[in-house]
Amino acid sequence: VGHQHPPPAFLRQVLRRGELVEASEVEAAWVEMLAAFRVKILAMGAKVAAKIGATHARSVKALVDTEAKRALTELAEGKLDEHQDAEE
Image (cartoon, rainbow, N blue to C red; front, side):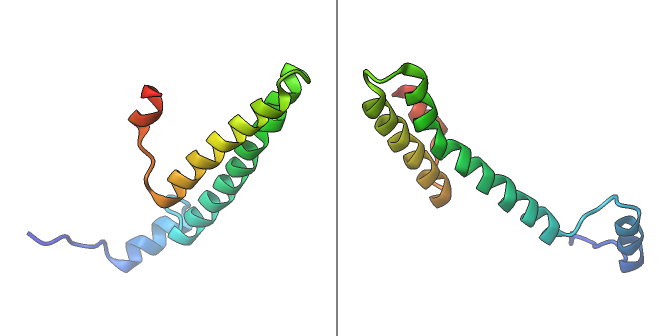
């Protein structure tokens, strides 16, 4: 059985009422949110290092930065394995 699409007039009506949004608007919102998320994740190393003090700040920052970049790279490549991090 084939999938039937709603009539164009119906789609225009629900768009006008704000019940649907254009896919391009959704995509733009996700791009903006993910860019802000990336900035915050990449800033975590410096924030954590500043909170623990000077003793191990550089090594903690490097470790957090490495893990954050690894996670972001996996996410960008679609290779994020949610079970892998739980086992480490």
